[in-house]
Image (cartoon, rainbow, N blue to C red; front, side):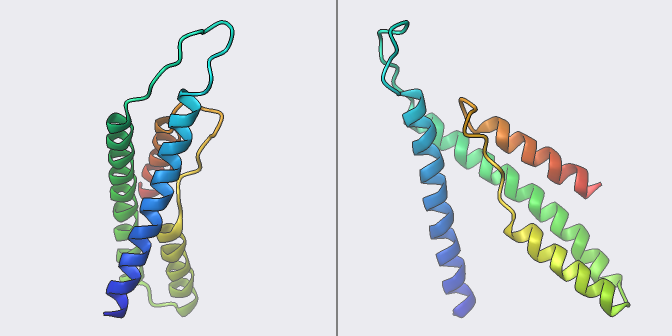
Length: 123
């Protein structure tokens, strides 16, 4: 039950982070128009939410693939120092989040870069 409670808390934290990401880019898109663009644009919130969920699923799937590689290495390690190093890498990968470029117009490029990074580490 303790693990279950921690998982629920982690999910709530992730949902709040995703809400913040989506809200930031929606507000950025819907910013007050400039003199050059007199018409205010409205973001499709459902599409933003779908893009964000898809990006998170893809990102976490890549993390799982990398973690499986590290766990396989850990299972075959015999040196205590190597095992400790691998355990720390596993923890680091589990905790890592994509770095968002807040200057971008949308978050998908940041997630794509994070996917490339995870993919290159999996090979």
